[in-house]
Image (cartoon, rainbow over all chains, first blue to last red; front, side, top):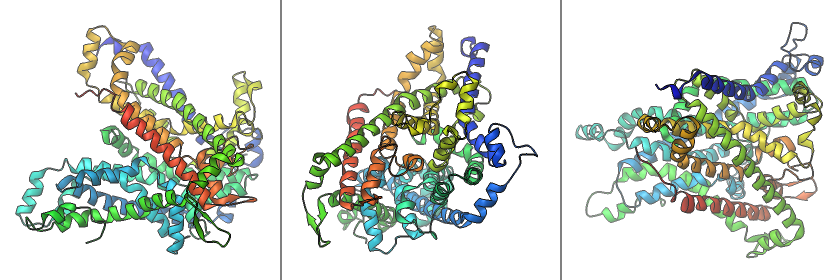
Length: 279
Length: 318
């Protein structure tokens, strides 16, 4: 490697900038987490200090767990996210396979039709969606959310997965056909296992916006029994806005599962972005 | 066969070869759900904007009267243009702050043999996975004059007198929110540009070095032109995301987008129009009208990108 591309002062400057930005990205989150474990007095007297044995206090967490229905909200979020994810991945992969594998008239048009949804946000159809859900008696059900999120996730899933489906070797599929496998068996036993890495990428891309969405839970399913974690914490935070212990604890509880999942899957996510899936 | 079966070939193929039902079966679930939940409601919404509710509760066709109200009635048009200009400012901040920072971070990250690169990109991307509820509240707490974290920090660097309750002041609230959103999403342009920079072949960079083009000059003259298509994609993603944003405003400032509507953007304006707030009743027809205008704004932006920008960008194949 040439000197020009890796001299010492340059690399020190690079690290300085990156460390500064990393601090900027992480510190606000860190600050909330450490303060959630302090007494009210300590939160205000010395917000930047780590909790010490004298200032350690979990009163905020107790309030959250007693007052909020967080377990139920968490369960709702989990059910909605996993069900939507399942349908997006299954139906998306099926459609992607059809578009990538078969030549039929209207193939290109169908691909463009499905890709439309990548650019036009589904939110703009909210008025129509709500009318439809009211007519179908689906308001305040998790089903309505699953339907909306499945429709929202499909365009990008089909788009990315069909790129990968094209790379599945034709020889393999034809060998299956000669052995008498049906097209369905070829999809499930040959194509699907081979695009598993791409499926993981699509899963992460699909999951994050669904888990974090506030708009559709607020409009389609605001009842206590169907609140998602995002909506539930928004309402809780609004009500307890003056109880700083409770607010900080609720935020910490909302942050931790997401961050843990992210740390586990970040490699997958980053590889997905950098593998050119989005190019 | 479902009526939305999208294989006209089947009709045509009759007589030549058996109908390939499996194509329809593979396509049907995705196409049906997508059409029923996304496309039909979207056009239903566009259609609703042409109607209004009569006094007896029935629907009457009014043509473009709702649009005339939105743009002509001073009360409506004032709120609409306020939201539209605020939204444009929100977008400009993202383009001027988020994307250049993202590009700069990606350029630094992609320098060869940088240690801890994985750690940095994981950390810098982290805020992008948090929900707006978390991000909004975290920053609301930090910027709160009650808590005093922000003033303490500014004092530490000798800028204590610069502190103001930015989220509560009409002239700074919108910019502050835009910067919070930038803080959250800077990881996305960073990662996309990073990927584009990594895909530039070493031979190109080595050839540049042979010609004595290194460092900053190399970035401006060699790398930047090569990643322009990615910058184009990021710009249009930013545009669509910003003109559709709602959550951050709702979480930090409420449906009223205070102070005094200074942070109202099209998404929050749509929400208020559709659902109503306090004394004003919600109006699905005016809501649909606002959504239709947003649809055309986004469509215009996407078309400008697809037909004017994308076709003129030069792409290099390696």
